[in-house]
Image 1 (cartoon, rainbow, N blue to C red):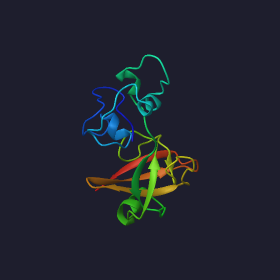
Image 2: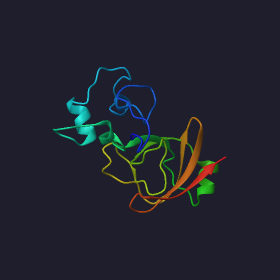
Image 3: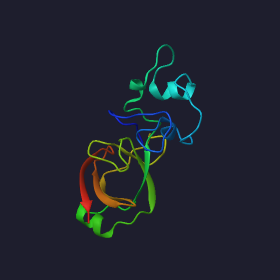
Image 4: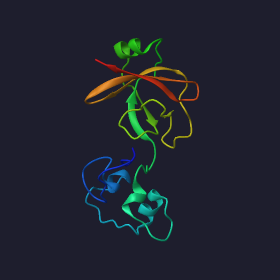
Length: 144
């Protein structure tokens, strides 16, 4: 995912978007410090002074989400017929992709998905999203 772009951040903690440890895939209560190499890499500060402000918006990599692999003619059709049968990845800060995010077929974030209308699903709801040929999300519809 990515860390919040403003507000509360902490090294530990259980809140996604606020916890640096969680962003790095560590246990929420892992022993970590600002001088640790993995934290410096995430913040983009190899040496010198580092502060919590350096972590705003930082991401350890693309966020995985469940999606239909089938592309439908419209987002409405994707909402109605789509099932979560594959894992894709996006470069945004939310649990699901948003407009202007890019969607990838691999965890490294190097291969974008093709154009189409697909359904993305999480426990609390789902969306249908449209991607262009370059994998960029151009529209979102909340599925009911």
